[in-house]
Image 1: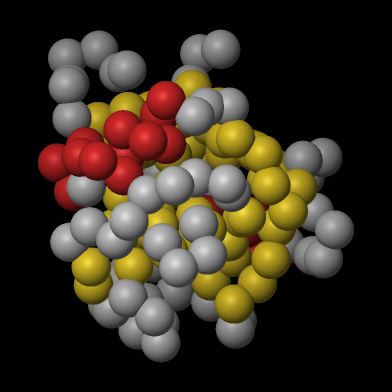
Image 2 (image 1 turned 90 degrees about the vertical axis):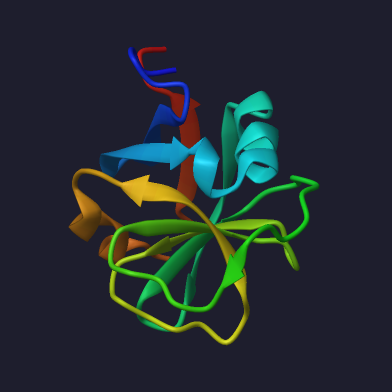
Length: 128
């Protein structure tokens, strides 16, 4: 966990062989979902695109929807319970499915736009 905060958890999102992004999950947004993710680290999954503004990674996480919403801003990170995916938004968007807001990408957001079929996302705790 980051120093001085019990709510914010600093992570590194890797688009294998292409880019590293800083990511922070915020417990106060969805305490149960963020807890499940943190306890499951490190995570790795295939990268996919949903339309032209959302990249996502497959996971096997078992977490339900929490504080669901349908409006997301550029840089937001969400969890879609229906298919256990972690979603990365690189434009303001209103997806067709409700998701749980869990955090934000804090650096190098434009790298997510370079996702191609076959790419691999991984998430690890910062500093490991």
